[in-house]
Image 1 (cartoon, rainbow, N blue to C red):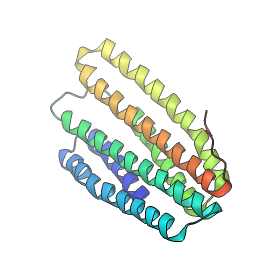
Image 2 (cartoon, rainbow, N blue to C red):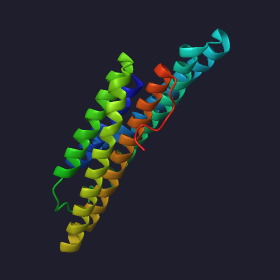
Image 3 (cartoon, one colour):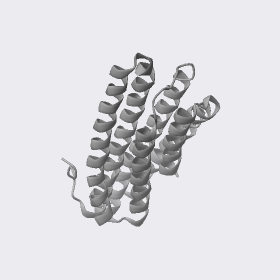
Image 4 (cartoon, helix red, strand yellow):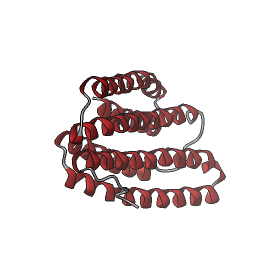
Length: 200
């Protein structure tokens, strides 16, 4: 539930940005508080299990991993909120640039999140390892979008604000990919006991 809410925040935040929808942007911002509250409930449950059950081996690793995963999902929700706030700042500015790059990057990130949630639900270690490799593609797309946005700025001064905001949104999406990777690494740890950087 926490991961799904965070994923929705990212998706709707980008939609608000692209469609210049201030109402939707505010909805995303308002929805962040319930995400934070859910994260704290999960965290509290983990602490209670540690104290009352004194778990060992796989059970202990699963609870410890859940603490980290809950924080990562909450942070993903924060990235969605930041995108929504960027959307609120852009409403009065001209937008003489296409958003195809942002839309493609969003699609990549949301697919990564969907796969991460499915892997987490199924405790699928092989899929988690594969997902971590996708982050390189997202990073490459971010660099490409950054360079394209700079070219728009150089060609047309009227595009400076819109391009700057687009780079900021792309940066938030790139961070979502990093956090999805962190979730997958913790899944691998919970199941196998291996704690390592799966995308060095």
